[in-house]
Image 1 (cartoon, rainbow, N blue to C red):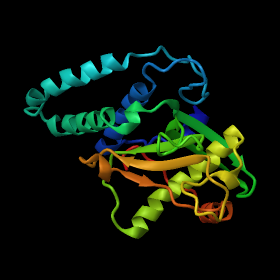
Image 2: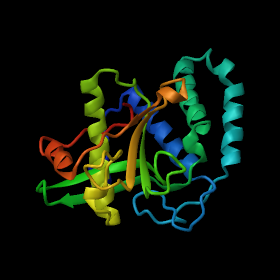
Image 3: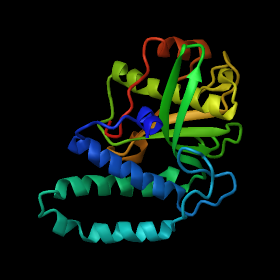
Length: 239
């Protein structure tokens, strides 16, 4: 549809990397929402629970094990390397700390008018979990997690560019859930009110779990809006 294309534009000719990223994001949505109940848990654009038939996470993990057993055969095929890549991402998500967290939404599409910018801002939240980055931190209401399958950035400028995407997502979630933007930051330094929404990028391309996560920076509402006034960050399934 028109609005779905606005949220995450689909290229006319998808690259192999984009196709793999899209396949993984579809699987991640199923996995995160598997076993989810209808009470306050949503899937997709509407954010309403019960919109899809719940899957068993145990069944999905069993499928992962079967896929693992079939990898030796797949490696002999032309697509063996690609299949291994997707399997690695799935396995890393399935064994990560986020697999043990309670989800609020997955693949939530949002289109929001932001008067301060004089434009419509759109995006898709890969996953939103209840609580903060630290699962024991009950002072935070939500944590936005963006799954990344591309190479994790190392340079400061590249990291800042990627993290700008999280700032945009905070604004979208703020508008949709009625959360004051002044209260949305990843980490508080005391200069702004304690955050109730955390956010991070999670790079499944990194083998070691401790190396995968990039947390959003501590910023004020004015700083975030100033960033976005120069342009809306690009979104992609293969970065």
